Length: 306
Image 1 (cartoon, one colour):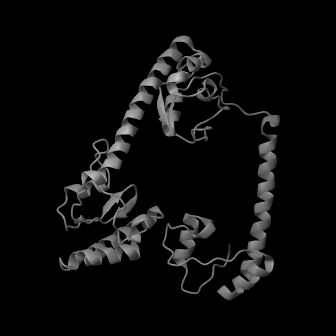
Image 2 (image 1 turned 90 degrees about the vertical axis):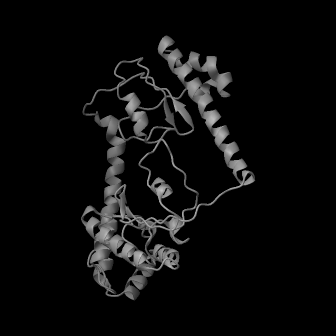
Image 3 (image 1 turned 180 degrees about the vertical axis):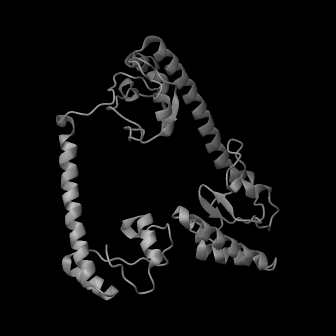
């Protein structure tokens, strides 16, 4: 169960305890069904809720993540339920251990082959990245290193060398995205020509090299005028939309009024069934502000302001 806001943590925990009490009160013969029914009605994990809380994959312990959530179920006796709700990554979980499911060698063969290929591929890529890192530190020439290793990497030299625009923490880096690991290895780079440690990124490894930097400063107007212009246009558009929404809100008193007024103005009308706090509300997405308003409404009541 998700905790939409910190101040709701106690309420979500109590709800988890109440559900757990119902599960423990069930007889051994009916406990699995009770757990499944409660999961369908209360779980906010869409991947497992529809299947009564059953996880879509088999669970085995990961030695590299000793505190992994579902690994705890491996040590439970089949048919037992965890005694208390488990808080993990800010949310609350109830867990029941089902019977062990064994796979034949034929069933496991595709997984074993894929796992072996992935492990071997990772090992080869990691070794090649380490060689590239050492060579780059030695000669400080990315193009030459790419030419030397392109054949082994099964890539063209121009595919191996990427030049990013100036970036700052939390920026989306082209071909990498927003990566804390990548930010950690470029942080120590202070001088032009500094080479960082290889790090895993989407689709392989990256070895960063600093080619230029700008010290923190107030930018010239020419550098930011496009952003300023876009921001001004966006703000004006938001202000206009806000006024339209206020006008609509002041003219309606029922859901039917909302539908009629919105359709008359050319806006889309939507309905969300079985909404839970922290869940996605149509195209509006997730928002603590939306949760706060919805939680305070009574049945049939409308918000006074957008």
